[in-house]
Length: 419
Image 1 (tube, rainbow, N blue to C red):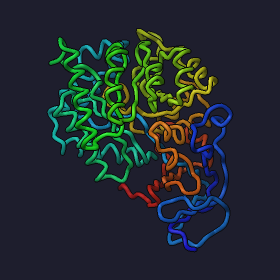
Image 2: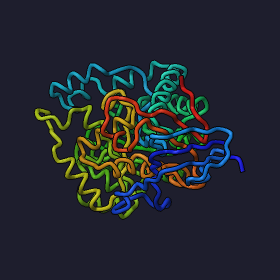
Image 3: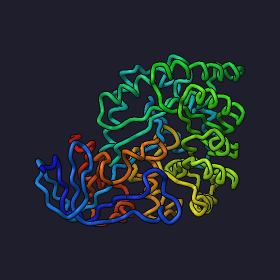
Image 4: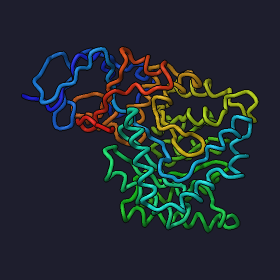
């Protein structure tokens, strides 16, 4: 038999192998399975991982290199227009997220995104996806939420679906109409909630989004409002995600568990009950350390220093809540497209160890978008979404920050040439 592609002599193959039907927790979360040798690829799938030199149409010599599954970036706001770089100065000087949000924040991005055409959003989105792919991300979830009206939320979904047609990255579309109440509905919250709910049927009929998300937070939507929207989405067969406990405790994690959401994301203020409920429901906890970093929330002098986060995250892990990591790439609270950067931040700020970080960025992130049977680990039959890194050991990838160590990106068994 002749392979389509053979990756040979890898110093470390990080298989992240585990029980594919359940996310990694407990002892499994501390194991990543490292082997040396070769990876055989046929018809875009992983055929074998061993030391036998099969004949292949194309061969990559990975001597002295690390091979890992492609990153799954399971929470992003990639489609948007405009820049909010000026906000970072305010963050660094001690202004809170709430203070910045009152003066611009999400609503500034809404204004810019509404002005942009689909073509504008697609053009920018393709550049962002190229950056992500070149840094080792092969699958990405993208949310709406910067349109906040019927015309522009649909426009964002059309842009997301157009990106999937034009780019090799696998894209998971999510409807986040309930990101924030727009100014024109400031005195009519229930009217906006009705609009968000009415759009669900259109989105489902046109198959524009797989997931429905809600920002359940004091600067977003109440528990009751979030529940109303999510239940409507669930009635129409959409899968659920929840922005939960980012700036305060709002029972978002408990709501996610109650409704069977695939994931609850942020979780800075998650309660003990929230951890227990999510574990029982199988809801994945998606951590977004880039937000903690970019909002300067661990720096003394910040209005609400979140020094408790490392202990809280350790409590989640020790209680065997399945954890994933993601960039939350967006124009305000986290500007990076690089999961390599997120890995280093998770180690530095959250005190997660290397195995935890890699599992959370690959197989558990695949569970957070319902794709663990296809991607997230290097195993027989899975898609050959692989990245070869220019380092001898996986720890170097997390320890060495500020540069891109991805040397070769392989998507569906094909080498991607971006430049």
